[in-house]
Image 1 (spheres, one colour):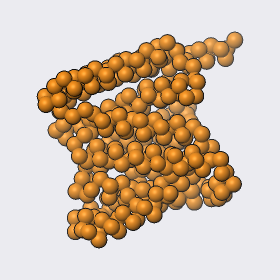
Image 2: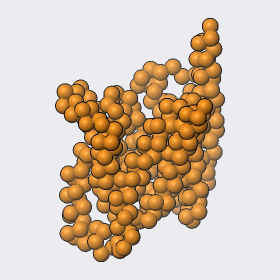
Image 3: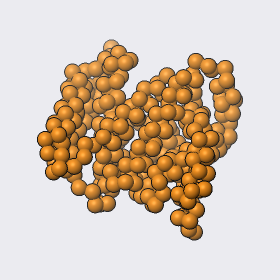
Image 4: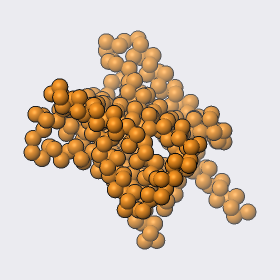
Length: 304
């Protein structure tokens, strides 16, 4: 029981940290989003490598040379996690936190859709309905944006981009057989040379942290690696002892916190965005009910 409780604590902490991350990225809004992304890649690589040393996973890291079949999936994961990190940082530092929140509300439903389409996973009727409801909300929002764009503002492209890059990354990760710390290190380390070149280029042209940050602000740069590594560790440790249905529900803690931060930062929910959120919440409820039915069916089949 004690072990189960600590898993719940780890899991909730991981979601809470991911939820408040927009507040952290706001501290870096003086820097160009690409500079922040480059710093995150470099420092995430550093902290992931320290995790590999601490967990004695160097043999796993070296074995990647023989795992040539894994290279395309790791390379694809590298590309899509970089795009996801970059778009998320851009959204949270440029006044689109609500779009970032929406992305992770609809993400599980998109994963369900991809799971059925690409991996032929069986979907219950209620899960199919959740995909239809979420899609309907997005289509209606697009229609409203198209009818009166001057009143409702821009189409939430960032929501779709963040969601699709994360969903694609998740699909690729299903094919990666490496330890999570090793995989994340390879995904970030692959982009370190380009990141360091971009940081040097930015500093040379006066667009970096030099001259912008002072005193304690310099600690924010290595902290980008910490806020990447810690929730990943907590999630990996916690997910092992949390039931799928409970974990699925708790995963909505993160976008809910992000939503609150977006509202507190002064962003407003336009009617189409509000409509999309309402459809997303209905879809989430259907998704969770479908997940509950799946787990119930598995338990019953185990008893007979």
